[in-house]
Length: 124
Image (cartoon, rainbow, N blue to C red; front, side, top):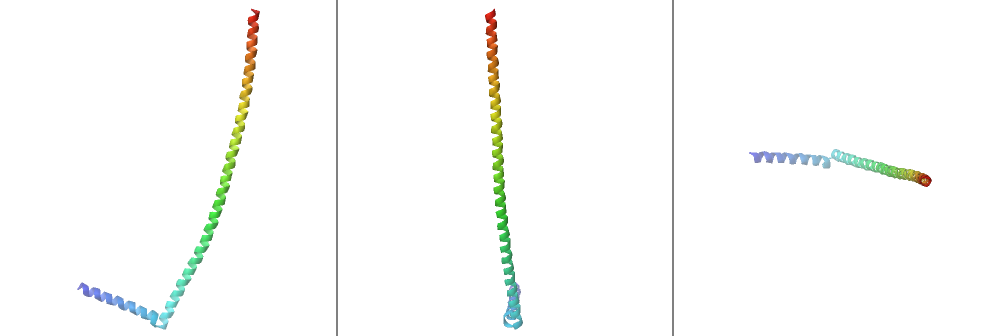
């Protein structure tokens, strides 16, 4: 019984496909319908192609802009780092100079104290 149902369904499917093929290929109205469908598919294909080209160009512009901005940020970061190093170097130099002055002053006071001590010892 199942084989008969399958055979009948297959036969009906074949009949439907044959009828559709005859309508589209064998009649003038069917040929016009098929031509319109082909034109619609071609139009859709062209529209998709145009859209993809436009979007590709937009993506290229965005990539170029992002690359330019990244380069700008990189240069700004480099400059800021260089400035920070220059300021740190200047401060270190100033502190070294002050430390040297303080050491010289301490040495001078120490020598004065030694001279005073020798003078006191010599008096006694």
